[in-house]
Length: 97
Length: 358
Image 1 (cartoon, chains in turn brown, yellow):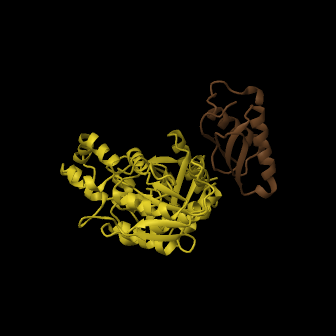
Image 2 (spheres, helix red, strand yellow):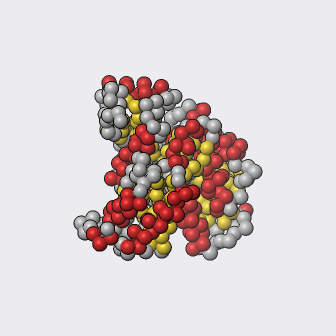
Image 3 (cartoon, chains in turn green, orange):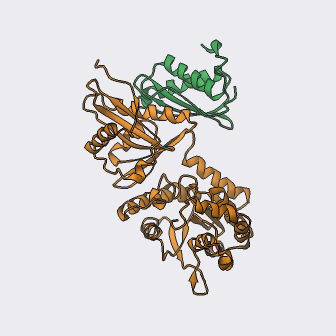
């Protein structure tokens, strides 16, 4: 899936994550800000990367601000941001769930 | 859990709402409520507690967050702050704005960093931060690419000039020539904000046209990182000297630490400033802040007969319909543009475009 524009999903409130996805030439670059980055940073980035891969996104810039989100929340926010950024909100990616 | 109201839009045109909002911010140490600041606000959000008192607020002006204030007396540390910033970012996203800035007191800088903002410059009085889908690193990469496309990098001596060029005159040209002679590569950054008689696109095009023969000069937009409404609103608005000094210090440090270092700029060239007080203070501050990292060279203004060439005089000649009197002050490219667009330029002046500022 191709990222066509910048999109945002999620909030900065506790137990949530704010994800901003924008275009990139190639590869996935994640800029993660999290108070628990030392312990859970790799895990959060892995959930985002896996979800992007499952959706067929190969090139994207991701800015993520985590406020203690569970994996299922991270995954949901990633899907929402990608669908907005790829302009596919009318075709929900059920298979990724 | 206490019942709290959701984030809502505040109508500052309602005198009662405005009064409570202003008193709330004043209680948090925010004191600048000058009309020229308030006029720029597009939207203000707020959170009220269960007793109906304002406990958090934030505003946006274009892509700049302003008047962010939060009372943490009754909440988990930072939760209202995060709610407000989050709501402001979502609001801007709906408007298609994903790159934003904030000017804030030093004590709030960490709170913004905790929600993903990146610090650009700081003084004792304030910090400027940005966040979003692009940033100063992307900007610097684009500028460097513009030089690489012209095969001018790597360069051993790099100079830079920042100008509004409203419009590009032979005075500007003289400054660029001096810099071009003394360096391998010269970046000319054209101020990006569209608040001058000549539009940003026109100013940029005229600087490019007027320097096209100088092979080592690269003309680029200063984007929001140089003398912009974000870093330096006083350049465009009448402001007290101390505010000018503070804003120019931030602008100078942003240039020194984010732009010059990344682009290996060793010298910044300035035109001497006999007339504009704001630009005069700006030049002084640049000379204090930039060295030793970046040398500052002040070039005396070029004169034409007994007159010092200034873009202000050119604009006045346009207004007075005496374009021919400034023919010798501007490059042929600028003169031709003014002749061809005379009616439109004069119409802008008639519609109230200020020609006496910068």
